[in-house]
Image (tube, rainbow, N blue to C red; front, side, top):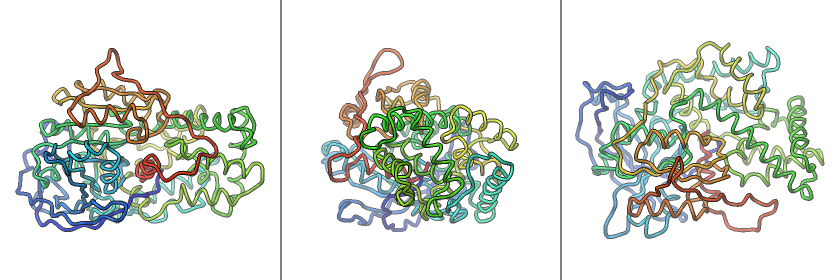
Amino acid sequence: MRRSAAVLCGATVVLAGTLTAVPANASSPHSASTALSTAVAKVSWKKCGTDDTPTLQCGTVKVPLDYAKPRGRQITLAVSRVPHTASKSQGPLLVNPGGPGGSGLSLAEFVASSLPKEVAAQYDVIGFDPRGVGESEPALDCKPGHFDPVRPNSVPSTRALEKANVDRAKAFAKACGTKYADVLPYIDTVSAVTDMDSIRRALGASKINYFGYSYGTYLGAVYAKLYPERVRRLVLDSIVDPTGVWYEDNIQQDYAFDKRHKALMAWIAKYDSTYKLGTDPKKIEAKWYAMRAALAKKPAGGKVGASELEDIFIPGGYYNGYWPTLAKTFAAYVNDHDTAALVTAYDNIAAIDASGDNGYSVYAAVQCRDASWPRDWKQWRKDNWAVHEKAPFMAWNNAWYNAPCAFWPTKTLKPVNVSNSKLPPVLLFQATDDAATPYQGGVTMHRLLKNSSLVVEQGGGNHGITLSGNACLDKHLAAYLTNGKVPHGKGTVDAVCDKLPDPTPQPAARKATNTATLSAILGSAR
């Protein structure tokens, strides 16, 4: 979830900045009266591929830190490209994995290699690290080691535990404010969207095509709102509810993740012959919470306490490909008192490295800046205990993940109203049981984007559903990218695809698939 598996490529510097005016009616930190267009140099591409990514190219684009001061301080955006090979190009296809805080450089190669060859050949697939992320400069790292184990128990059952967790959140916010006082006021979605239009100019394109996952769906919708005349095609997969940015969206996540955790328990019950944890999902879930309570008292290997256990299992809510590993680890602890398996799982699935510290720093900077958050901790306490009563799996873990926003040192913006009737046909994808971006987000975005079509994966619970092996979904994607064709149905949903089968405990040995690769890319930030 928070562990970055993206491969970063080198970059080459472009010596000119760019700027595009933001409409005066948009919710934006920039003033349309002070934003001026400037000349822009095209990206100078340099080979940066590996044996796995032989055609990947990299470059950089210079942009103003503050678009209201276009000739002021410049920052650098890292970009990547898989160039088109067809005789006729349909232009750039910008791709983003979400986060906020996710690196998009490796996503370009993933998308280009996962689309049908004849479709990918028509596009220059463009990845980019948004401002503050990865290879872009400056890259934020507010407080290295913020997630080092063992953290305080996430459930604040005592005042001491609550204080310890609040103090951690305050310390992170203070560290960001001290280290990046001059940068934080410009790390937000609207600034990132304006950067996207700067990239468009650097590419020499009059319009862009865009394909975004997760938070990238909000990024794309905001771009479309501010620059509707610059949108040629728009694909949004696993859709953020734009009306809940960001406090309410995180609360809704808690309920969805709890439901998905229960789905894992039911899956384990189905394979009792393998895991020997029982056939009653409720009793298996009780064993999980008993394991959590035991680890809160005595962390496994001095590394995996209650909070770290949640970190291990939360990725299972994003991608059911983790379920066999999670079930095996769970069973080893309960049946064999094996703590080593938990430590191994933590190291492989949940441990935060430097790129994870960077991703989280940008995540906090964007979400805390994008919209207002309760500043009275009593409101957080009341709301999260109410959620915990009904959906305890991730409620407090998620609360502490976002808690720095209660103490964030910058002023907040107003969320952008993404409603839009000025776009060409738009294609939306949503799984009904997605935990990270619950189903209602797709329905809401469909309503707000008047010329959109919604394709639903019925019963699907994974996050990021296209280019992951579902031929029905990918057929709609390929048709749209080829000729702009979208399905049209009656009612809320325009097309329905069946979900892929859940994994089995011991899947046949096979090479790494695109599904696993996409899961890793989307896992660069929550």
